[in-house]
Length: 394
Ligand SMILES: *Cc1c(COP(=O)(O)O)cnc(C)c1O
Image (cartoon, rainbow, N blue to C red):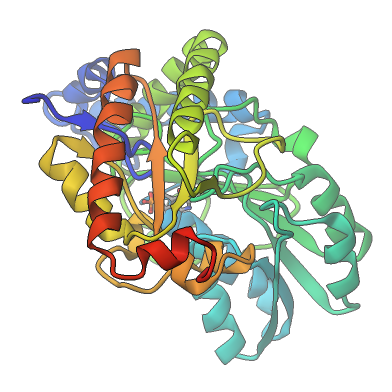
């Protein structure tokens, strides 16, 4: 096997060549600053406005409710800290789910150290956060609830509409991290009933370092980045016009291709799930029959280390992840797996596989051929394997 098979589309995606094509002029001949009043500036401002319109149309928002950012992480930080501090507020209660991306959890932890109270809400074992569980932790002084739309590790899709209703009934605003769902499922901020939503361009075949935050007109949000007052004073700094053009082009392609593409991905993912579960003592993380992203599946392979599987697969040309890509390098088991009740020692044996635009059936079949001997070999090297297999050890 000489060609590499990339199966980590939930971590990032290659920029689609059609997107690159649309971006290129904005690096050179159309280099204007979107805030300048002369022709080249107006040309850049028009491109930026067009990109904003594409995003707004795709998610059912108004263009002035879209703030361009440097990515999903910045959007999450802006939503959490900006809304918590909106209108000059310096305290209050914030709820985040325990399966959030670190880009939500870390700003929540920061708030907890700076005058706010934060509750981390655990999901159920199936990987979903329940509205009734949220209801139980809501307080009179709750100002913000943040629950992600599609979970990047498990692939489960949260019941955002019901969760947002609970938040609103208590007078709180609702933010969702939609980095994994943008372009991949039908997403309408009005139907979801959210006040803010975070998006990332590089998860949808757009450029890295580009993202957006939807913030409803009525929501008060303090800026994180201050300066020249760009993006309606919500996010200063000369706008990344080529990035915005690229993100919009990428989203347009996702929306156009979604009806067929999501079916294709779903069937590749289902084949993957069936194939991996054919190996003894493996299981799928998160329930199979709940709403799910079409492209992500996460497994426990008992008796092996996820890292060892990853490295051996890599040597054979296959790229998958273990835990979450962002925290790789640390050997801490995934907070998401722990929060759905996965025992610590099993969480070390997790593997996430995610398919995308350039994944073929042959790729999936080749992967399913390569995996079992690797797992078998690693289990053979594990002195505890026979005891794990017999059920004596977990
Ligand atoms: C990738 C991702 C992010 C971070 O986005 P960046 O653009 O990489 O900063 C945040 N949340 C989720 C759910 C993601 O998948």
